[in-house]
Image 1 (spheres, rainbow, N blue to C red):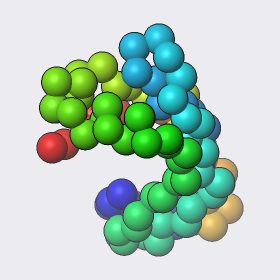
Image 2: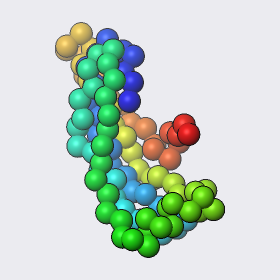
Image 3: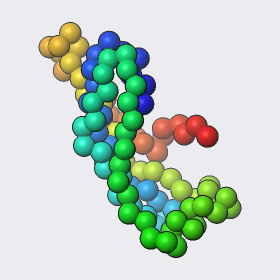
Image 4: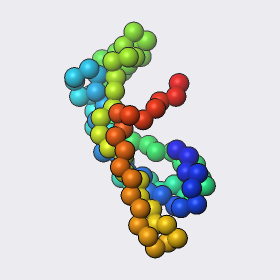
Length: 96
C-alpha cells in the first residue's frame, strides 16, 4: 500500500473472501501503520484447505472470487486533527 500523504496512517481491514455466495475465509488486519510518504505491506492470515487451494489455482475459477467488508484508514492531520476514511473493499481495484 502506498501512502502519498504527509500523514502517518493506520490501516485496518475487516472483511471476508467469497467465491460466489460461499464465504471462504475471514480477512482481518488490525491497525497496520504506513508512514507518511511511505510504502507498506498489509498482510492477513487466511485458512484454506487443499480443495480450495486447487480451486483457486484453476484459471477458470478466477472470476468467481470477491471481497466484502470495510477498510478503515485513520491518522492525525498536523498531529492534532483526527481523520478517518472508511472504504468498501469490494470497490477497491486489483491490479494483475
